[in-house]
Length: 266
Image: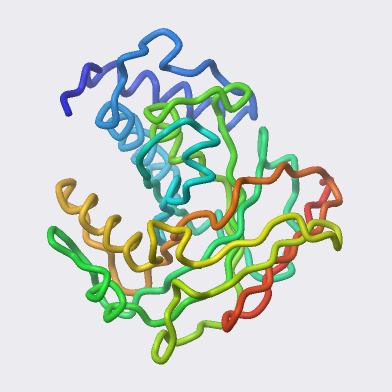
């Protein structure tokens, strides 16, 4: 797909998102003024923003895949996944207290995380190759956030905004993948002690490893190899849930165990 943005326009949009991240003040959707913005325009902006954050000292430790489940695609009116970098500063552990005021309009999702044992790259990467490259799976939560006002986004907007990333929390337990099918992993998601969603591994493109393979194949044309040790967030198992200060979230997974966080007011 051809890009319509010039390099300078891509940098300008990235600068607007950079300022929004710093000030916690959202900006209007880019597609409001340029409705024909496409996927490659979004990734051009994402690349500029990613580089600016790296220049600030951020380090990429993995990637998130977004919009892999039918509920999330329906919620945002899109028909394909996207991806964005995960920075080390975004990563929390189980039972963490995470300040709500770090975000603009946070939502939360329960996901299966993949930790790579070896490098992985496309093109032509298959789910089986992704599985063979995996050290293990972890129970995970992702806080998504939008620097676009009121979450009024189209696909190019969320791609530009680092796939609407915010933070992730990972279980300390890394479960080897031998002997079970991650498509069958069930999950129960609770907010403040009340079950509000359920999900299953097959919600992510039919197979979490299909999501990882999709990522490797879509990074390949950009010259990116997934290095050993990378954290891959494979996508939400349910529709995203709003967050408020004081909320406690718990996701309980078959085989992978639980993961919980508390949203702190400060």
